[in-house]
Image (cartoon, rainbow, N blue to C red; front, side, top):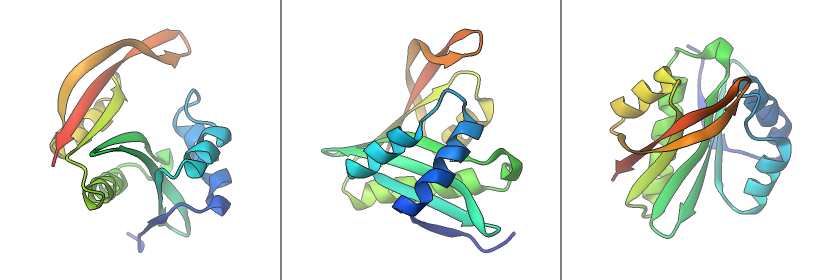
Amino acid sequence: MSALEVRAMMPADLEAVAALARRADPFGWTMRNFQDAMAGGYTMTVLEAEGRIVGYFVVMIVVDEAELLEIAVDSDVQGRGYGKTLLKAAAAAARAQACRCMHLEVRASNARARKMYVSAGFCETGLRKNYYPTENGREHALLMRLDF
């Protein structure tokens, strides 16, 4: 595995991050969503490996709680532990800002991500029916929470 660098997302990264987001989820965040999050002061981080951005996360802090709004790893490098690296960094960023927990939503069909979240200590807390758009309609979101 090549050297990894977890670092703050910069404005110059937004085009690459938005392209990765489109590859990860055609219904996901747009360039404008990332620009707005950056302008809003959200915690935005990229993971670099193999000389390029291979993943990212976006966390919103509200008082003493964090919400993991976005996390993705490029499909051609999945299975190398990059998602776990990003998730640990997101949790560390939330703890550093005195958060007591982290929330997230995940597609019910995303078994790989759900397994990663459970292995990191997240527990299911609820369900949002018909939350995510799909090519054939809508899909449920599972709500998950990690207490620090």
